Length: 281
Image (tube, rainbow, N blue to C red; front, side):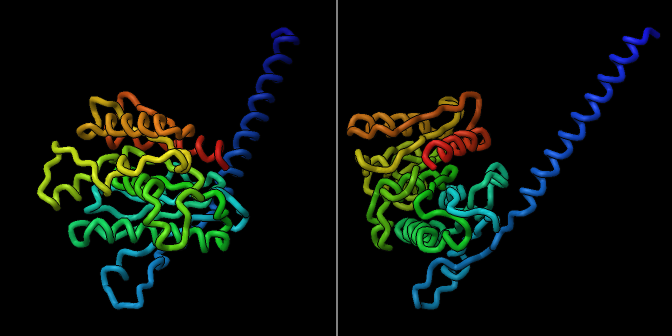
């Protein structure tokens, strides 16, 4: 074998070996970073002073953080489930990203009315504003997000200021709203409790659309494919986007993830959420 060819093969093998060591080191560092995070579970965020087993059971939140974080962005994540089911969880897509994540449980319909459900979520957000600095997060960098029912809650708390105002928090101090496939008309579970079917639209005070205003926080509206989403979910969000634009809200954006239905859109939507955090952090 020619000497030059042998030298070339040896150099290539050395380069591959060095590259393998670098990749292994990076992976180990990334894993160490992820392992440094911990989740503190089932923190009570609502004390009414009255014994209520359902509040005790459901009004809990989890905080996912890391000892090295300081003044980090915070995502308050509301689970889906049509306001009638579901439970808090830390999304895998938000783990190890240099942010604090707060996952919230809230009381569910029809066991409670929608007012109590939204009040729970407002109380949880108020708790985050008051306490998140103890977990490495910044009260000036709080993002609200959630999928489906969680997207509806995100939009309601950010647009209808009464819910957070009750707890002494200005909704406009939220850094941004990022609802995943959230209902923008009155929620179907609330309509069902009032004898209104899924195909009968309603826009009343329990609809984010009812509270369109020019000075709400930046909002990223995300849905799946228009032909695969639940009922008119894309069109509801498109109308919200248009109304916010018409009333003078400049930081309104809409994303339609083609080829993805209501559930499948959730995974790619996290990329948009992380981009929003980078933009508004």
